[in-house]
Amino acid sequence: MIIKRILPVLAAAGLCAAASAPAFGQAWIGQVVGEMAAEQQQIQAEFDCRHAVPVAADSAKANMERIEKTWNAYAALSATSTAKDIAGVFSDEKALVSWKDGGQSVPLDQIAPHLGAVQDRKLVVAVMGGDNKTTRAIWSAQDAAGPIFYAVDFTNGTWLASARILHLEISHGATPPETPPAYCHLGESYLGQ
Figure 1: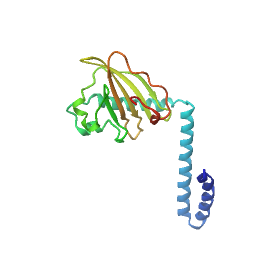
Figure 2: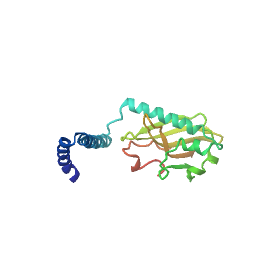
Figure 3: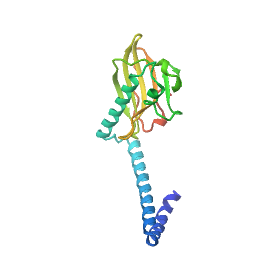
Figure 4: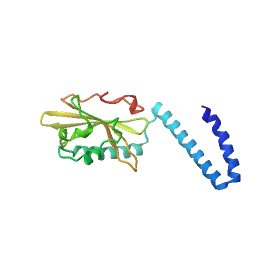
């Protein structure tokens, strides 16, 4: 709150500095204006998130394309996959990443022996977070033991960055996991927690 009150004073001081040192002043003012615009975008995104404003259709489509590409890369992993292959589909935020099969948690650097190519997978549901940064999805598939479901939390990625898996929980049986509710931020609660 204090920063918001001081910001106009600092901006005015920047204008004075701009008169005496135009290049420095202009750069500083540009930085302050950029920071204020970014803060305003965050405030608007938070408002939209809290008030259930849906993600724009073109943004949702792009998110799902990145998520499908990452899921296809995961589905192709096997027990012989390299650490680089595995790292290519999981988030680099190691403290947040989890992989569980039937309640058994396995550290990411030890999952290769637990992997098997995922066949005949079908998307059951995908719920995009109101912050447009994360998506929860459930896929169904079939393995030798019968029906299998994958409940997955993704970072959506951007046009510059691929989507990545944050949490993945595998469950066996005919009953799919509960459809995830709409949510605002992934950190509030996520599948498997």
